Structures are given as structure tokens and as C-alpha cells.
Length: 639
Figure 1: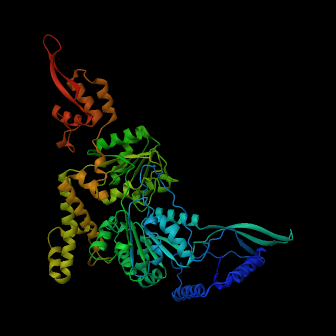
Figure 2: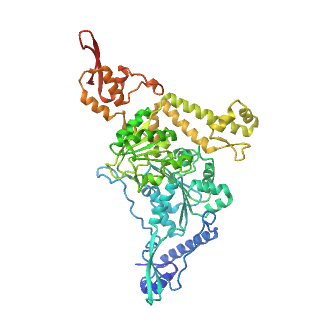
Figure 3: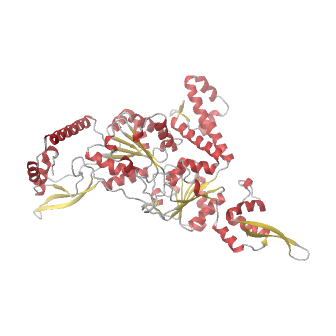
């Protein structure tokens, strides 16, 4: 076999001296017996020159340092007689060959079903041709191998070429998870020898190192924003020192724009970096960005756009509920079968759920919210809620801090409940469950919203978010427009209390427009418009997956307690008031027009409207119970 090693294999000689081997002699003998042809020699020379040129270019760039962000750990003092021999080699075998580990399949494939494609299979060898100044988009659903590609394909390639990657994500738990995976993949054991004076011999110990520690850095967008705000010029120079920029969970710029005033810094910085480095944008739900770059601005070329639809085959049914009483009953019903994960929209609702459920599930409820909230100390931390990918308690109630960056590989999780209406957020919520087999499925319950509520939400967004943004932008060309707007009664108070698109500047003397927050509300307005036109259930589920994949899984809300009552009393005449009470309690039956007022007795017509979903109806008859009195009896019949 013809082999030409860099620098004529001089490092083999050093290893031979350390390990007592003869690989260098064997290499020289092989070169003598199998010399390269002139063409092979020319190809090798050109390859070497190209590698040297790349190294020179890399060395010309400023060396990145972490001193500004974290103190550097002092190196451990090494004895003079230290000898090192690597237990495992981290350099791929063969010139220019990259050996890829097989990507684990999370869900075993059934022989009759097509194997789900992964990002690694789409990209193939294309990543070797990614050059500075391009956008690469992974528009792919959860569990499609986006992070796997970065850590198992791109990272070894960068390590082999002495290049560097910075990996940016949106949550500290996700950052920690990715960092742990980097350390696992880069784990290298070395035998380190030192002279033992007592034994008068070299004693070997095993030292564990991370071969990737200088190849990749994992941080959050919030860290990036803080860095850029403090020293924008040096921050940009630092980011340019990396050969690849990875922007994971890029939907963060949509979902968090209303609560993070510095989020525009992430957008501007990444956008600027696309002029100098290959930037890889990854998300399952950042379609408003990705589609615009692909279809309108041509900022991403078709060959650099990789799309894999989201796979929600593990969702066995999608059910909508409408009242808080129904929500409580759903949680109780499902928690008796397995684990339940509940996403709430307000802290007050989280506290109320805990109070109402602790009578039956005392000690089995876990809660979590953002650690930055004042109330955080009242609840469990994320580490206590999720341990080794499994939920710690039977019922877990969380805010949207849990909606991404958390992977739940727990077959006991059989139900997810969401009170949120935003399709992008709900798509991320569904993605928290990572099924471990085809049998690992779950039911999903969404809070339903009426057309009046959707209309009200649109009006609030228009008045409190989009109108202020428009007035501010108009005021840049005509300052009187903005001043007239500010002087309208109640406008300043409204801006201070509700507006996320226009805020006071950091000094409190002026006003500033937040571009990404406006974009978030424009996207929400489009989603709400679809819900108004098609109905909430259809509009929300279609927007979640941008297809009708979940629409066929919609099922009516049914309670097992009511199903059991129907089976037990089918065909039996029961006093109407008694049956009405039993049906109402077991089925959470209410008058639709007084859900938020004092409850009134639902009529027979309303009761039957609910019972349609159970395949039965109530028929009312008057019967004489004695010589002087009659009574109304209700009887259940199959439809």
C-alpha cells in the first residue's frame, strides 16, 4: 500500500523512542519498496502546500482567549521524567479520510416502514466544501440529527484540520447537555509515567483528557449578547477567529424577542458573521427566517438548504379542552395512567394547579420556572425535575422555560398538556418528548380558544405592539408623527405597561424600536389570522407542522369516568336531576356561554351536545311515581 505521511513521518520516530516500537523503520521500508509515481508525488505536494497555506492563514488570525469570560486554569506541574503514550488515537486513519461513527437510531425502524432520513445523510460530504461567507440552513424537525451532525461529523473534521467551532444555543440546560456530549465524544485516556524514587521505576497512571477542548466552544445567545454589548469590536474579532459558527435553536430570535431586550444583538452579530464565515442555522421552527432567506432574499442557496419535516408519529391523539375544570380532570385522569407534563402560561395558574392537585398527588408534583424569576426559589430546579432524561415525578408543571433545550427520553411520559396558543412554541413543546421505541407514544391536549379570544389577541397585538413600532419608524423621517402619537391620552402608560416593540432606552430619556420583537408579533398575527379563517384547532395544528400531519389525529375530549358511568347505566331510567348531576360532574359539562361566570344548570340539549362524542344521548320521560306526583326520568341510549 502506497502511503506518504506528512513531514516524512518524523513523529513516528518520536513515538518509537517513547514506546519502544519500530513503526518509523517500517514506514521507511514501505516507502522504499512502494515509491510514489510522479503524478502521486505531485498530488501529495499540492495537498501539502494547500495545508500549509491554510495553517499560515489560521496562524495569521488573532488567537482567541477565554480570559475575558472565565479565568484560565493553571496547568498542573509535570515531573521532568514524565512519559506520555496515548491509549487511543484521535487522528483518522489514512490521508484525508474521516471515519464517521454510525448514527444511533432513536426509534427502531419497522421493516415495512421507510427509514427516516437524517441530516448526516442529506449533507453527505458537502460540508467539506463549505467556504467563508455562506449560510447553511438545517430546517429539520426534532430528533433529525442536527446536533449529531455537528458533534459527530463536523467536529472531528474540524479537529483533524486544526479548525475551531463556536456552538451557540438558547438555554443553559441545552448548553450543558451539548458540552457534556462534547466531553464524552472527546474523552481520551493517556498513560502518564513518572519516576517513583521508592520503587526505582517508572509508574504509569491513567489521565483522562478531552481532545476537543480547544476545537469547540459551547455558549448561549445570552452570553453572545452580553459580550457584544460590552465590547462589540472585540466580540466580532473573537467570533471571526472560529472557522464555523453554529446557531442552534434559531427560533429563539422569534420566541424570546418579546422578553429579551438584547436579542437584536444576536441577530445583527450572526448576520454580520455570514460575510466572513460559514454560519450554520439550525431549528425545527424558524421557518419565518429560513423561508424568507430561501424564497425572497436568496441569502441561502438551494444546495445549502437541508430540510427534514418534523415527525410527530409518536402523537397518538390530539385533543382540545376549553375550561380550567376540564384541565384539572384531564391531569387527574392521565396521571393515574402514567406521567404528565403540563405547560402553563402564567405563574398564577401553576400555583393553582399545584394547590388543586396535591390532595390526590401529594409528593408526586414537580414544578419549574425560569431561575431568573423572583418566584423561582418557591419551585424545583430543572435538575430536580428531569434526571437522566426522565421526569422525576408523576406530574410536572412548568413554564415555557422547559419548552426547548430539554430532551425527555421517558416511556412513562404518556401525556403532554399545553395552555399556549403560539404554534411555534407548541411545536417546541411537542419536541420535548424523544420516543425510545415505536410503542413509546403520548396523547397531547391543547387549551382551546374561542374566535372572540383570538380576535381580542389580534387587537391587542395591533394596538400595543405593531402600531407603536410603525409610529416609531414613521417618526424617523418625520419626528412630529412620533411626538403626536406620544401625546395622545394613555399612550405613554400603554407603552410602559404593555409594549415590547418600543421601549424606553437604557437611560429612560428616549424610545427605541426592537426589530426582532416586531417580527415576532408579525408572525403571531399571521398565525392568528389562519386560526380566524380556518378555526382554532385546524389553524393551530397546521401551523405547528406546516402540514396536515396532526389534523387526522384530532379526537374529541372524552373522560373515562363518564364512559364508565354510561356503560353502567345504559338503558336505565334515572331521575333527571340525579343523572344531570352525575353527567355534569363526570364529563365537566357546562353551559358554553357562562364558562367564566356563575355556572347554571346545563339543559338537556347542551348535555346531549356533549354526549354525542360518547356515542349516546339522553331521552327524557315523565313518569308517575305515585297517585299524585310525576317525575322526570332520563335514560341513556346508544346513537
